Length: 238
Image: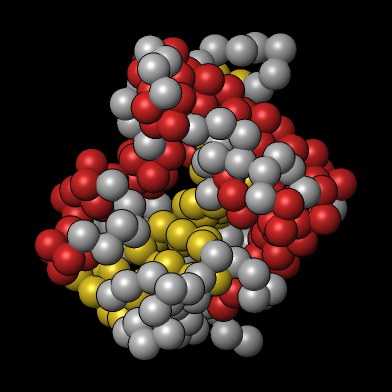
């Protein structure tokens, strides 16, 4: 039997991924499909943490661009990520997956407060840990949250689930001749301005030597393929 290549990882989901074809809000069918894929991965006895964005509900940067105070807009975004996290938790538990949601902002009636050692203990017990509310600070993206939490829990890889099957040199939806990269270094990603993640998140990954795998979430089974080391999407490291 083939063993997983990675045993502890962070799965980064965009908020838009939860919206599916709706484009906004939460699509229960999409969330259920994601939960089913995560359950399939967990049957291999790996340790999985999840960070979910909030762009399907609210984007702090967009609110700020329209005149809202940036910190206030970002805190609203953190609440949006918590809504998404609870939706994913509910779907996972309906599939029999033991789950804990931890928030960077205290909201005891909703979820646990993030504590690094407690999160690691949950992972060791086979629970999926969902990190909500970003880093708890404005001006930081959920990509940075994924990089920070991955470093804190000593994850071996960050799996970035996208709506495209990897990283391209231009938008493949607008340019049919866009070139897909099989592998990149962090420096190449930053210098080319490929928009995989923001500079803060990229630097955190580079400094802590945490590789990224960018793949298409719409292709069911890709999460497990990435965990088992199959060559899918784009690998970023070095």
